[in-house]
Amino acid sequence: MPQTPEEESLGSLVAQASSHISSLVRSEIELAKAEFRFDAKRVGTAGGLFAAAAFMAHLCLILASFTIAFVLAQWLPMWAAFLIVTVFYLVVAGLLVFIGVRRLKGLAGMKRTARSIRDLKEIASPDEPPLPAVRPDGEPVTRDGT
Image 1 (cartoon, one colour):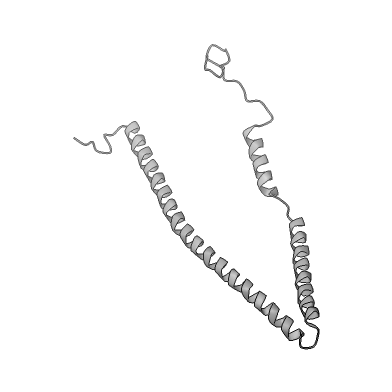
Image 2: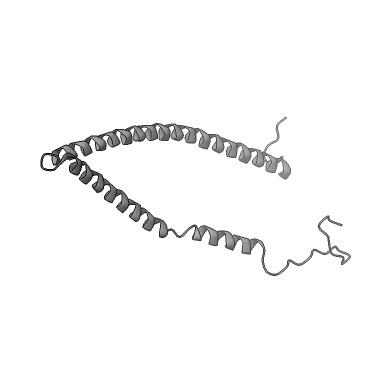
């Protein structure tokens, strides 16, 4: 015969609460996994589409480079027109590398994370040693409880 809530013991109530909490945590983890799988598929598809678009843009850049070189070849020798286009791209690439290196030099690392971990370490292991536990007879308790 089931007991009413007033008749259940404290231990039984704690066991039920623990069971409910663990099933809730398991359910939340399963939900997170399902959401992650769904999002991962969408991100993977979007990444593939971006890669295809980047490849197509790269092909267009090559064709545009030939077009510019052939237009310049109307006024210059063919070799000079292609040289101008090549030097232009080298200058742009060099500028991008320079900007990228400057951006990398500005990285500070994970200072806040390191500080947070250091603070947690200080909290976990204070400078003062903890007071030893003492048995009723006045003898200190060792780690093994004796």
